[in-house]
Length: 454
Ligand code: UDP
Image (cartoon, rainbow, N blue to C red; front, side, top):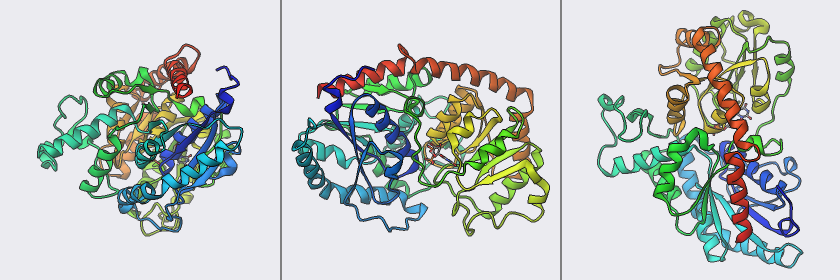
């Protein structure tokens, strides 16, 4: 896209939510806007603060939230997000006003707008108070946004919590989702979660909503959302494919696994990762270990330090496991996931189906084994397995026999091959969407024009 003189002068303020799956798309959006001539300032929480050296062209300013040394427990993440909004609401206006003053004294032609993560909703009010336009970034899928609205409504109508006997019932108007696919969170109590998603889904004065999704993938959900809201929607994903390559990992990526992948045969490796926030019990670790070993497929497995309850890392792996797998398995603390999924040796992804992981996998045409744990992951898993049909859902508890079978179904059996073919077609569609004239490319141009018009 053309860089005009004026474009080079406009600044966009970004406010990401402090979680890996939210930071990545927000900073990717920053890179996209920067390559289109905007200057970028990121106001970030002190908890999980991004590494500025990965984005030398951006300015990073910590929010006045004083949470840097918080050791936040997984079950308190939702409460933490609410508290963060309350704290920042009081102090962000002053902090941002200082920045506006600072910018106006320089050669930068003011701040064009604030783009904030839906879960950093305090930003909308600050923008309004300072007379700045604001735009929302929703980092989850469009379909999962509809599940949140459904959950709020079903709760208000007295249908939530629902009896076990209803868990397989379809949710009205959300085919193929069932009650059990609604976005319940393990990171806080139901009421707290409902509070967060209600606040996050309100639009008071914001001018537009950006989605990290693709029109050809979520056309009907996007159309439903557009019908319900007054402001334009811009599905401009997959942003990791449009943004210039740069990592925003909070943990150090172990790139040695790429050399190990180089030694494996084409499409033979199952990559296993449950993202940045999911936790496991030791029993589940052990079942996963034997399931992978018994599948006899090569595997690359991410075990995040601290993600196994009661363990530091993998010291509680079962006896005999390492000898059994020999060179066939490789375990890392954190992987360069996008490179891993793009590697020719990788043929499948056992994932929790966080939205970034789902998009990254589909973008590379890699079929998935879906093991959702919380929030929007169940809806994503259902879409992967039943709508786009590029994955299998592992609905049982983590159990070695089930894991062994599902890995072999995906990696060896004919049904896995069929998924690979469908995955290849989706990958090609994604590529068309981001090219000149494709839907994401067109929406991006419209978004940039809108920001320029502010
Ligand atoms: N990720 C990574 N290395 C890993 C595991 C995950 O870089 O070893 C990245 C992954 O590429 C994705 C993000 O972390 O961009 C996780 O986001 P997602 O929405 O998939 O799940 P969440 O962590 O939010 O549950």
